[in-house]
Image (cartoon, rainbow, N blue to C red; front, side, top):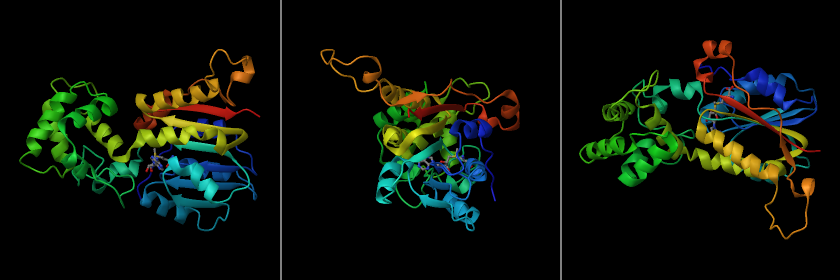
Length: 308
Ligand SMILES: C[S@@+](CC[C@H](N)C(=O)[O-])C[C@H]1O[C@@H](n2cnc3c(N)ncnc32)[C@H](O)[C@@H]1O
């Protein structure tokens, strides 16, 4: 079985301040590195619900939890968490939510999933590979302007126009169905290499984000955070690139500041603020963790709490 080494594990656990009888959600199970640590801190009345869009992740969760009635796994997008909790008719809000964003090592390492520019495989990139457009389908139905936008916005790729034109010119004669084709086309279009970065890194990140509509999911989940979490409940989010980080900061800050009322409405100070606060400063992995797990290098943990 492919493993995933959890990033900022001790820090994320400390941030959630687990209560043995609390109810927690890991919205990004992956292979359960963080979930397992949460579970170890639960007492007999504690509960852990885990979500992942990926059927393989949920299959791993079902195996891990088969003898533990405190835990259950659901294949779902974390954007739907509020609706899921409502549909379950839960009497109580949850005490903590962990979101460890992006893709897992098994997704990257299994060539068949099509996320990797280092190994050849079908150009898929879907986290939930049971539905929706593959990256190959998405590329076949997109136009040059949209591809440039995606590469620029989601990949922060300065050579977006060149890469998009190369891809579209090639695609006019040949379908692009393999990761190796996309990696080669992106590499050929990048005139200057970034240090320690494969020239196709940004192209793969951008198309993956588009195929999975990742930023919309993050925004939706965070918008409902004050409904989902009980007073004193904690949110811990681990982001891996500046787009995710920006959405986390902006969406939470907006709620911390509370509703933007017209100046004529007579509210002051605390009355005008929301019911959420950041806990501490953003946390980065130390050099020991980065040496042991290079995938941790771009991680940042942000923590917020619903005020009691
Ligand atoms: C970085 S990995 C999580 C690793 C996990 N914390 C561990 O220690 O094994 C991210 C996981 O979240 C899942 N994922 C990403 N976005 C999601 C979303 N919107 N809803 C549900 N799962 C999502 C991915 O399929 C992947 O399995």
